[in-house]
Length: 185
Image (cartoon, rainbow, N blue to C red; front, side, top):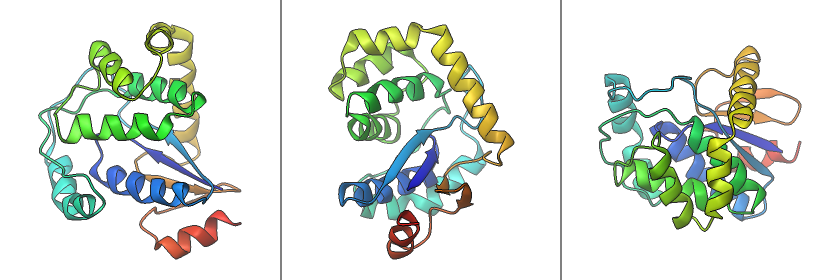
């Protein structure tokens, strides 16, 4: 089993998500866990590091089916990851992730805005009442934030990071064959 920790505003996460979703669709055991590495409740301007990461990963993302455009902000993503939990439980995790990626990287959507997230939830096929309830659930948000703090304590601070069953952390940039082999461990 592989677990990918990712965040939507990370171009490297885009490539990892698209690659690992293809492997998951082919039957490889992959779990996807959203991780907000900044842990802030406000949007930030896009940094030079984020633009450099975009330049480094744009061609590969395009090969995998998503053209990356320059975003205008780096939004907080805790709400998107909270709804991601709802999507996963509804069997719509892949749809939610694809919808968020396209919205952020192609349409410059503010993934920190609850109304934007609810619109995206509808596009992804989610029950809007369940999505709204998740966004409004302070305990769910706190629990997710605490889980992210616990993950930081295990060494997950940036994204993307891939965890192999047993807790070994590796780069998701390994070849598909290596990823398949690791998933069988």
